[in-house]
Image (cartoon, rainbow, N blue to C red; front, side, top):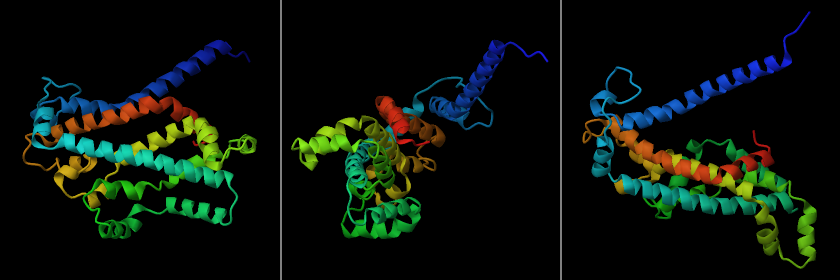
Length: 281
C-alpha cells in the first residue's frame, strides 16, 4: 500500500498544530481583550444585551469617572508596596530556607520538610481566624504589614528553592569552604550568583500571588484608602456613584494588569529557565 509524501504529512501536521495553538491562544486572550474593550465603551453599550467586539464610540469616561470618584491610585500604591516588598522579603526567606534544607544535614530535617509540605495542602480558611487573632494582638489590623508578614513564609517558594538547589554540585561548595569562605560568604558569592532562574520563578509567582490576593486583605484591611486593588474592585460593582459600574470595574482591571505584565516581561527569561531547571510541569 502506497503512503503519501512524508514531507507533505509533516507540513499538514505542522499546520494543524499551528491552527490548534492559535485557536487556544485566541480563547485565552479574548477575556483580556473584552475587558479592555469594555473599559473604553460607553456605559449604555457595555450594559446592553447585544454582543459587541468594538465600541461604537470609544471613550475614556470610565477611567475619568472611577479615578476621580475613588482612590484608585492609592489602591494601586498599596498593592505595589505589599506585592513588591512582600515578594522581595519572601524570596530572601525562600532562598535561605531552600539552601538549608538542600545542602545541610541536621537532625529533624526530614520532619521539618514534611511539615512544610503538609501546610501546602491546608486551605487558608483553616488558618484564617487564628492568623487574624495574631495580627490583631500585634495591632497590625488595617496596616500593610498585616498582609505582608503572614505571607513571608512561602512554602511553595521554599519547595521550589530546595528542588533547584539540590542540583547544585556539593563539590562547588566544598571548594569554596576549602578556600576559607564562611557559610554566609559561600552562599552570597557562590550559591546566589547561580540562582538567577530560580529568583525569576520566585519573583513572578510571588508577585502574582500577592497582587491577586483577595481573601486575606479583605479580612485585615478596613479603611477605603488602605485597600488593595482586588478588594477595591469588589466595592465598585454596587457603587451607585457610577453610571456604568462594570465599565468602572473594567477600567480599573485594565490598569491593574499592567504591573503584572511588566514583572513578567522583565523576568520571563529567568522564569522559563527556572521552570526547566526545577523540573516543574
